[in-house]
Image (cartoon, rainbow, N blue to C red; front, side, top):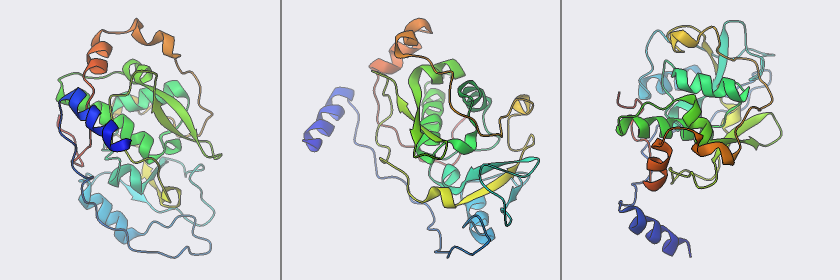
Length: 238
């Protein structure tokens, strides 16, 4: 019984049921235009910028005819509207996310919004507890999982390491709403600019579940303190 399971979870964790996902602006319907690879529009990208508090020096660009999500123009990388609106990714993209994805040999544009939400959720949970997570921590919590057949990926928690709950089960339609972001110190942590991965790859270099506890005892703390977690603010507290 799902209701009984949720009640047990709340009782076990001694936390209240999380509120519904916060409101976000509705995207106006836009017909797919022949020759235009993305359904993003400049007016709604302006809404995304305003709602998500994107700094003015972060440069967005719409894809032109013949361009694709996996073949971005020189000096840019691909993101999706849902990375910002639903997953609450912020700029500059934190170095820990860049390092983690480099270890997995994938680009951020290959990660689903739900996957980005996992990363953001863990980082914000760490901030709230006064802990700065590293790429090793993220590796020990999450494992890469394939989304469809288009070299796209998400994440799932490793065995006994689920510390976030309440995410939607899937994402719909997000692949049609991609845009480009200029790669510079405004969009990516400056120390990661030389290593930032823009090219799409095939995920690899993941840990197995038996190597989890070779790291810091903080893993045990997070494991024993299960929480419901929903990110409420476009920009997390620092």
